[in-house]
Length: 262
Image (cartoon, rainbow, N blue to C red):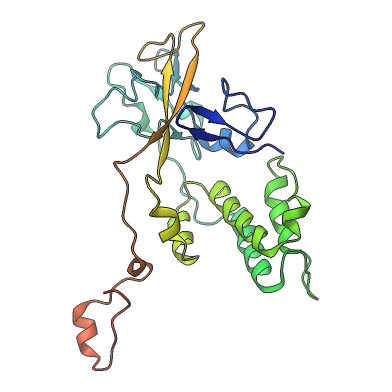
């Protein structure tokens, strides 16, 4: 099973023996490559058909710009795009604005993950009550197998709490950039735990041995370091699980009690 690498202050580590810190994006979950543009990846072209790269190494085009335009994590979104839509005009570098992409409101894999979560909470990982064709584990495997990922491991498939955590991780991976994460964290009431740790948003600082602002040169080697993204950190308090009822509406009801914390 391919495992997720972790960044440390001195580089990359992983419990996967096949992991190569010099090429950390190889042999990951296929959804990584399908959803995310990583530093140095070639994607799309300029109007003269020369290759366009994700220039998020130190000194690269996507880092050495105004702070409001900088790619802070050094990763960009690939999901819902296609290479032909990225045909930049070198004269104004504004080709991204020439195309639109679809916004998906619900997909089959979301339904499978919704089903898996409900079944696991109600019946456990593997139980199929009368009238139900699939267990919670079956539903998760449907999502994973469609992209070539292996079945849920036996030690997780037999444990309700472990499967709960796996389902939550699968939602974070499969539904990435589909506007579910914020609502999931609040729905599970784990937002305080996830968002209030020091520097919860991480990126990667990439150093190139031989690259210009627009492209890596032959023989270039990238090195990677953990990067704390501090500009977008938010404070989450318990009261943020609920919204306040407007004062005018609250005053209309004599016995009304405002939502906790407001």
